[in-house]
Length: 269
Image (tube, rainbow, N blue to C red):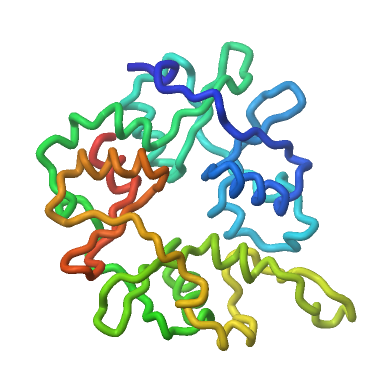
């Protein structure tokens, strides 16, 4: 199977002169993980993804896409699917662009599409054989500042939330925290006027107000889960249908692992 057979043409394309803030809004509304950055002739310049944005520093209110552009591998329409899986895993991204003979973006290939196409390679595997075990968790009563600090220090993108019996009740993600709280206008020190938080990754010094907000107040309560004994093939189908890149592995109501597309790509690449 070739990249052209997996290629999707309904992707989000943006300009290097678009603002980061506006593209984040487009990603959220369209439920995209990433956007393809192109020039005026639809030639590929790079990717804009949520994690790449969050690792950057600067004024998100004024920052342009050009400042957070991420260079990645490019696919040709004839690229073999096994090679596509290798490149996706190496790039640690959800999509890669497919270029036509004129070097224009003809479409994208997504990680989940590759996993579905190569699902036979995962035959017989159980989730517990592939997933990362013993995930970091937060309590409902933990402060938002603690969640922000853990995500920043551990360099992770999501943390399951548990109640006092360690049962799963929700999840918080890095992108949601930044979008909802780190991108809020706040007084800028030394400038005498309002501004945006300077670190779009997670700030070293958390805003004092976040210490008064509980994780339970901001977490998503609907979490896509899977049992450790479930077959990986079924988990891949669930990821694809739910349009998610990971599943929380749950046993007896408690989170015991995280299954990600990167884990799975490693197995099929």
